[in-house]
Amino acid sequence: MFDGVIVFVFGIIIGSFLNVLIYRLPLGISLINPKRSYCPHCNTQIRWIDNIPLISYLILNGKCSKCFEKISINYFIVEFLSGLFFVLLFLKFGFGVPFFIYLALFSTLLVLSFIDFKYKAVPDYLLLIAFILAIFVPSFSFEGALLFAGGFVLLDFVITFYIQNIKAKITKNEELETQKALGEGDIPIVAIIGGILGVQLGLFAIILASILAIIPAIYGQIKHKDIETPFIPFLSLGLILVVLFGENIYEIATKLGLF
Ligand SMILES: [Zn+2]
Image (cartoon, rainbow, N blue to C red):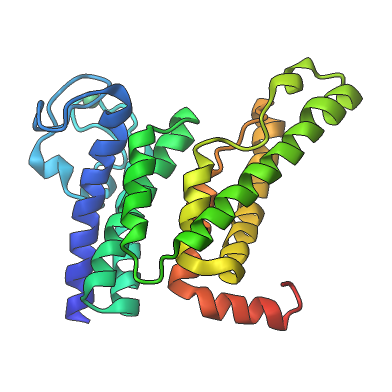
């Protein structure tokens, strides 16, 4: 129990650092200079007391202590998720090599996911880091990774063909003629899934990701007329859920005849 609390606190502190990465990396701001974070609205340096993971957000009610402008709930979510994932990884693997590799991999996936949510594009070097970390996971096989990467490219070709040549004509929407089905950034993530989970659980993770992505995709289309849903967050979530609870979810799904 005490171990779990320490791991959770460690997780939310790392989560706080991941927030800095999510904010600074896409803008090309150095990670060490400025050392302290600034409020994006009023440029005031954030005091350490206002920068305590989870707690400060709750006390300040999600607002800057100086200008009272709203601070994105994403900061809170990233800290919370990273605390939660760390604890779940600890419960599953205990302290050991897999724990630390997954910890680094999940953290990278969190950063990738929130950058993808925000910009609908991610830096390639982060994808590369995620892939290299995945190679160190004990269950990783290049065979699985290559199989899934190839399968994904083929699937992308087929769906893109459908969107650009059939759906575009039926809906008379010219925008669709240049629309790609799946993002290039998704390929390394799919390779990571296949490499770590193997064919069966890997497919299961991708189906899970697609199901998880359906609701936000429909919501985005109706609310913002948005045809692009970032897929990296859902692929990452599918992978994380299957790594943590894989056998259990898979068993339940098979018993229900869902898979
Ligand atoms: Zn402010």
